[in-house]
Image 1 (cartoon, rainbow, N blue to C red):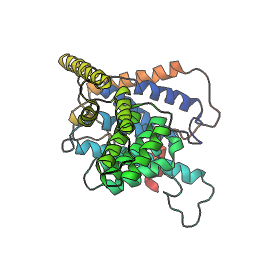
Image 2 (image 1 turned 90 degrees about the vertical axis):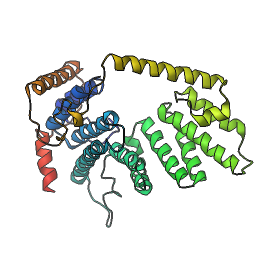
Image 3 (image 1 turned 60 degrees about the vertical axis):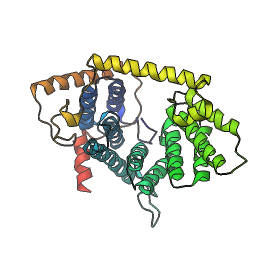
Image 4 (image 1 turned 180 degrees about the vertical axis):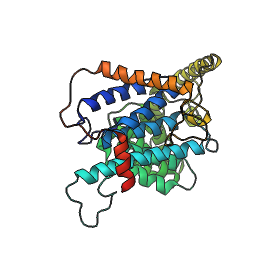
Length: 340
């Protein structure tokens, strides 16, 4: 999951098996099958936190595999946002039921009644749209207030997003501080590479602005670190390092190889449609939140999805977390959510 709520993994054997199924589903290479499994899991999740985690993953899949253009993908982005808001609602219900008292005048945001990963994703969506920088910053800052519930790369990503937002608003010092905080974390994923790259750009901008305290070697080092950690070569990095820099040449070769592999996969017909384009979850007019009409093909996909659940059950190692069973189905959670 994206963190550790006090209730997570306390739903008995049922939750242990369902979380195994979540792990198996995430590793599935077929988008339609993965989404069908997640939707099925959302229907049988029996605790608030498990339901929130499932809806978070549904939203994440829509974002990662939906239409990439803003105009064409607007409907999918709205569905993803809806999934993240549902995840937030489930955490709010859980926190309200388990919280002892709320300080007078303290609202839901002060009490952290939301899903950290979903807040981060809502921030990313907001920052990708014009004139939404302030809203995006608010979302990301909320996610960072529950940073212990984010994976390490998620913490780095949140700090980088804040840095980029501040940089776009002309706050170079604030952005540099965020990038350095990101690089202080132990993660070495894609977000760390981006932190190096954005820090190099921010330092370069300061130096061009007349700041003689910025060293050229520091700028070069951060660009090189970004390339070594897997970032594709950018015009800014090439301009500073030069085309014959060893780090630039390696990254160019890597990018060309990746492009070749993608082209080969495309020729083999490996692409698959999303849920909004007639994929495995119904026609483009249907939502993952609407009742699904199952065709013969979808029934077969449902069987495939359930087979993943069975794999999760088989893989269960018998290490049952302590705690009572929760509600019998997500339907009960839906009813409580709508009644509030």
